[in-house]
Image 1 (cartoon, rainbow, N blue to C red):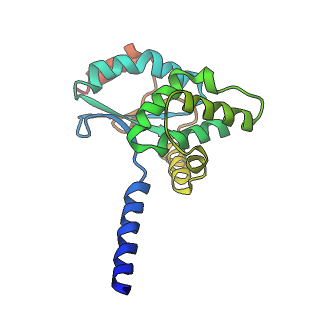
Image 2: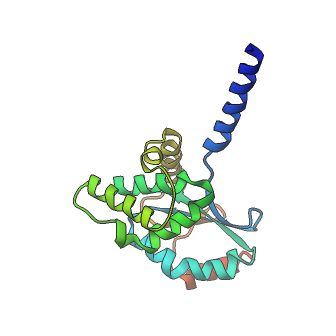
Image 3: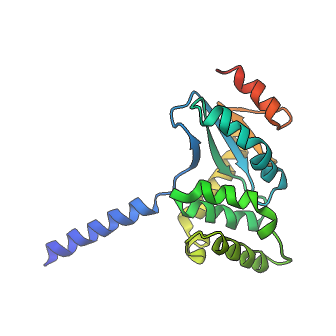
Length: 191
């Protein structure tokens, strides 16, 4: 009986640790020659513009072709962005889809005069979009919270990130005006 109980405990612990593993939100070939890191805040209108105006062309020309991959890292600028980051990280297999939806529809959920009102709008938006997740569990998950905060700390310390979006290409901060034309010039030099 004891042996069976120990085996069951070990089995359930292994399931929990596998499911609880927080993974980075990435688009593209893991082994791509070019790694683009995007430090973003989900309430930042410039970040939303990047996802609407720049990312689709970047994805088409460099990510989908296998030349580059992009890693989305969290740099929340306020409590609403912090909670939204935790939501995006909560469903590893849907993280990119949630992230893209939150940026594409930013004005639908980033509204309200209190944190509670914004939370309510975020929760309603996610339900309307059909994302199945436990909202309270996601925003109160300590592992995910640490993951998001560590992204922000690393961005500040390693890359001197102080605004969003900040783009890092193969370990170097992109210092030009963030538009597709400037990104393309930089990327073409690395191919």
